[in-house]
Length: 100
Image: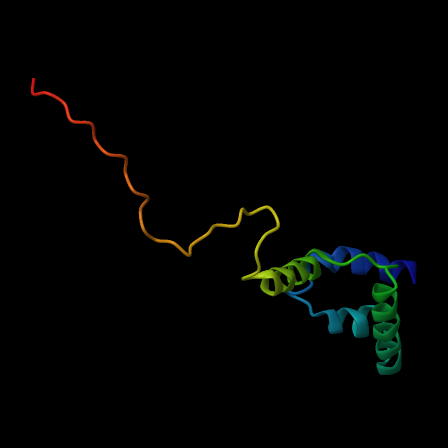
């Protein structure tokens, strides 16, 4: 088994470019359909329990979902601007003066 894990570590940079995850699991790790399904369920449960940290891609997807959910909502630090009046304030009277 250690030899197979060494092969997986060696192949890791090539997964998604030259090898699929399925190929690695079935041909190198020699997992059966039942083992693949069982491991998928265990991995999902461990991620949900926080035993496996999220990948960078999963974190980006989660952040995009948060950003989309918050879009259009006011930020707590933004000042509230009164837009009910659009008229300019009256300017003070210009004092009468002499000509120069």
